[in-house]
Amino acid sequence: MDARFLATAEVAELPEAPSVAVVVDVMRAFTVAAWAFGQGAERIVLAESLDAALSLKAAHPEWVALKDGPPAPGFDAVNSPGLLRTTDLTGRTVVQKTTAGTVGALAVQDASLVLCAGFVVAEATARRLRERAGDTVTFVVTGEDGRAEEDLACAQYIARRLTEAGTEAAPYLRRAAESRAATELTTGVRQGAHPDDVPLCLELDRFPFALVAALEGPLMVLRPHATG
Picture 1 (cartoon, rainbow, N blue to C red):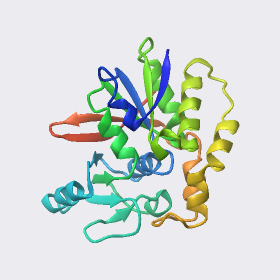
Picture 2: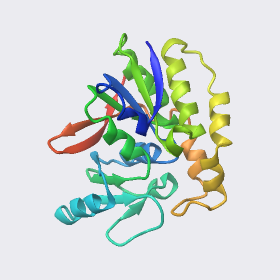
Picture 3: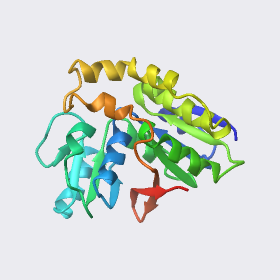
């Protein structure tokens, strides 16, 4: 299986939509998404803007809206796995808007298969990709305009796992642990964070499902997909 690694902005330059896309945001969008499903959420709606997220929340007051950064009026939660892991989301719909991850997923919404990923669902993502053997996989590295070391490390790890099941995770996790994002979370540069966010983002294969995004009417919706 061939793999290529692109920044979100580079996706728009492709002559056609990729067949299979894996959108990677380790710190923290898709770690948070996995935790939301772990806490019982039914689905996650990926919003294109803060205004769109607030509009969805206004139309559906029972939905849970979350965003990057500090708490804000109209939002129920922030994009932190450490803060979300104690929230009961059983049967709830979550609306998520983040700086990089949700933007990347919406950029490839026309792909035939869109997976969203972080280290917490790495093996489940690889298993789902193996079901599409023969397709070129486009990894979308969302953070820092495609330069985020934690996202690139995770994308490269998953790509290696497609052909080498025994690939050692430690070097890739080390790169992520030493990334700019990890430093900013640890030192408090990024608001709306919990002290456990970085270790939670680096918890390999915490969840047994892949994160599959698809258009449902006008909405891009993320759901968990159990893999064998």
